[in-house]
Image 1 (cartoon, rainbow, N blue to C red):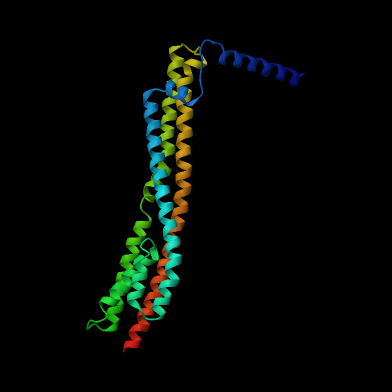
Image 2 (image 1 turned 30 degrees about the horizontal axis):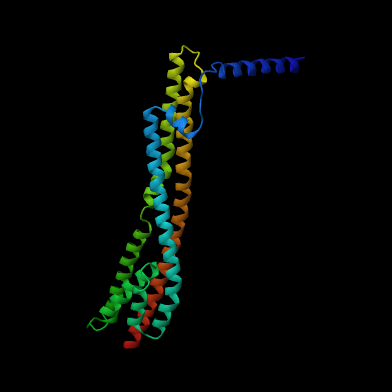
Length: 253
């Protein structure tokens, strides 16, 4: 008996809800992009425009970093064996030329700085220890510069990923306020068409905020991992180059 009454009550409630939602058949509510945009007030439109700008900027950073990292990886794979062969034969000039031909390689940028510094002090009167210390400092400076270049744009990507949900939430609040305003103006009997603008503002801005934030956060984490891997490779290359300098200095004594 209780179950039957509950089913009947739910049926009545559902019927009343349907009547309320479609009580004004004259209001044509569109849910396509053009209709949603037309139903929005300008404050919500400004929020949408800001989110689109943030999305475009983050996509630009993603493409730029993807191209840069792919080129660095590809050229480094070509550079490493070529420069290793030149160094084994003691050809510093050849190693520098090889590095200069791979300007997009993160390893080549670091190695070039160390080799040029070592070569510049090769004919000086400095003792080997000072020569090697100068080369180490050149390697460290080059690593810092390359690290900054690799991270270019990632700070903005992180900012977009962390702030775009809140920008969307601001639009959601504007939409809810707009819906409540329409209900108040209609004295509590507003049709779906009357509150559609506020509903569209709330839904669209929330969805856009998440759509902008999720890719930005995922790609920021991905690119940060790539930068860390490149840092390890540069540290290893610097250590191997310093060992090479030590052997060369020891051989000259």
